Every structure is written in structure tokens, then in C-alpha cells.
Length: 240
Image (cartoon, rainbow, N blue to C red):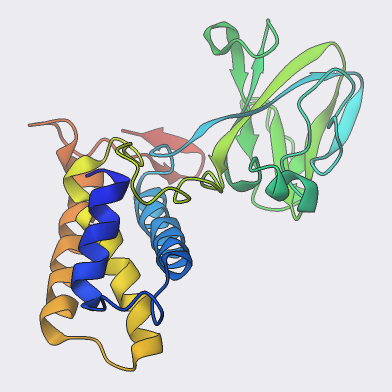
């Protein structure tokens, strides 16, 4: 569904033609909130659904990387955390991977996928078989080794485009999960119902049904006849 169709469907759900009571700005806000929720449902099942390349960093003897700095390191990407990053539309919501490459920003030259530590102390647990380790806390990335002359790429999920819903007549698609874009309108309607004071049972039932179908689609349905392809992590061993 296009942005225009999603906005129209939301207005049909709320059945409120009076734009004094429900302005276009209100519709934009409800759709933005709903799309955040839509993306989070998918991300919690398959973190790679909305993941992208967020930062490319040439390191010079770094063990701690402050992701609020611009640039984060000399010659690298600007901040991906902090108020400036979110104002610019590049704020990171989830970190999914940290990888080393032999060419800055070129994921075809990955030399190592770093292992995520469960705590800061885990950075220093000897394990000769493990990959280099990182630990992410608040707005800083801590590395197990002092890395110099290394190219690092951070992958993750960033905030949605702040202007995505600015034009409610747009014929663009929010993303390629087109089979379930009606769920965005349903989620927006649920948020509206908090203001309105009631959620129609039919809408609640449809929301539950479509959410369950969407979750199953993310986990199983995008590759027809394939087994569960979503990443499961168990003691640093990865299964697909």
C-alpha cells in the first residue's frame, strides 16, 4: 500500500471526516507512531528486516568509540546517537552487527564479524576461538582489542525517515512489506482509540489477526517452502 492509501484507510477506520478534530498533522503523527511499532514488530523477530549500514569507521588504536561524536572518528561517519543524530534522521535504534573490512565501507571485503559481549567484563574473558568482541552500552562501543589501521562498519536499524509521512497524498511505499501495510493503519487506529476512549472489537480482532500473520510472515513466509531462516543465538553459536 502507498502512503496515500494507508492514510485513507486510517481515516476510514476512525470514521472522522472533521479535519478540525482530526487534522492532517494528527494523522501524520499517528501514522509515524504506528510505523515505528510496525518496524519494531518485525525487528524483534528478524533484526535484519530493517537493518542497514549505519557507520563506517577507520580506526586508529581505538578501544572505546563514542557514537555521539561527529565524525565518530576522524575520517568516519557522523554521529548515529545523540540529539544531533536524531534531528538529522540518522539516529540508531538497534545495533545488529559490527564487522571489520579491508576496504572502508565495502561489505564485500568483510574480514571478521565481531562477537557481541553480554557484559563489559565479557570483553576480557580469554577465548582463543572467539572472534574479536564488542560491547555496546548507552552511546559507546567498547572493543576487546586496541584496533589500529582497521576499518569497522556498524550495521543496525535507524529511525524511520522523519519526513516519510509529511505528504499524505504520496504514492510512494513506506517499504517493501506491502502485504501488511494495512497493519500500519490498524496500529494507528489503536493509538487514536486511546484518545477517543474506545477501540472497536472488530478492529481489535483484525489487529490481533494481522499482527500474528505479519509475525509469521517475517519468521517463515518471505522464502516460500523454506524452514525458519531467522537468526537464533545460543552461546555464540549461530543457526539458520
